[in-house]
Image 1: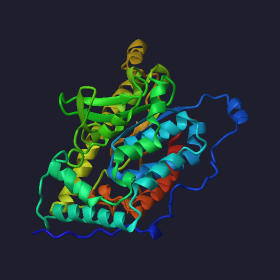
Image 2 (image 1 turned 135 degrees about the vertical axis):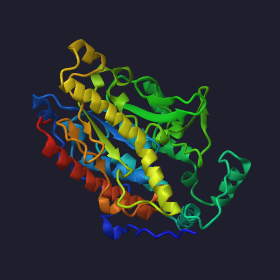
Image 3 (image 1 turned 180 degrees about the vertical axis):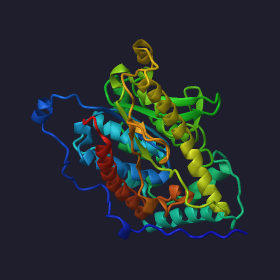
Image 4 (image 1 turned 120 degrees about the vertical axis):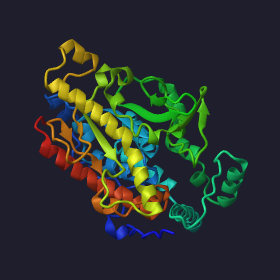
Length: 407
């Protein structure tokens, strides 16, 4: 039987404390209305795509905070936000805050993750039991028992194990409805105005990828529930004649659609797509034990659709730069120049349109496994958010160093 090498656990000492909701911070890049009016050069249009990854996407909340604190929403035009699974939650919360013109958009994200984390002794005990049970099972130390999340037995076990806990700790729908006013969103109707929100899921009946887009329909709670419905944890989310699972395995996150006018509108085509990435690209060793194989498989599957979409956009960029498109043909692809995107692999040929990923620090990523995507402990969530804030600064510095067409 394979034994698991226990990975070091990140502690609060490894990163600045990121308690929530956070105290207001001065936004270094923010400009006054007079300064914005005085700007002559048009802002570059960016879309931000948020990869899924369970509770590890608390990193995304921290990354968005770092971007907003740097004044990105002032110095750039954020024309689109997309996400899948936990990434869709972060994208939706940021989108809602931007539409409402909240002065500190990250506060809504931090409030959500604070309430979604295990903090009381009972919550921490349940969280530890669930995470460690799955870790032991994946390592082969406990037998695997397959139970449908929609079965009466699974529902009874959930009710019994969560009795006495905070209602919103176990009521995911209620938690979303507390932090997003879906009645207000419904009153907006489909919105052409930027930013456009897009979330990914998959229709399990017809096999099509689903894109829930704020420009085409009002966003509702079922869209978020569908994008987060991991098949072995949540039952399929059924509404409007469809049944949906998490898009994490097939559209993680929506990328190419952010640059298609049929989804976002011609006025919202970005110049750049920034990707907040959760799954690491490379591994420093060959997985051998059962749990290592499970970890690496999850990482690879989670990156497949991301790399496929970026590769397709790279082909279009290369053809455009080589003059392969007549102007009217390029317009059919909504292209007026190369779209700045991350390159998939560090050893890929560097091109002028490449920008970095916004991803976790190598030190933190090395401590994580698949089961940590299910870990809702306050310590884990806080460390993930703190690393996100730090890595946003790294990303902005790296992008600025590469930027020859200053915004």
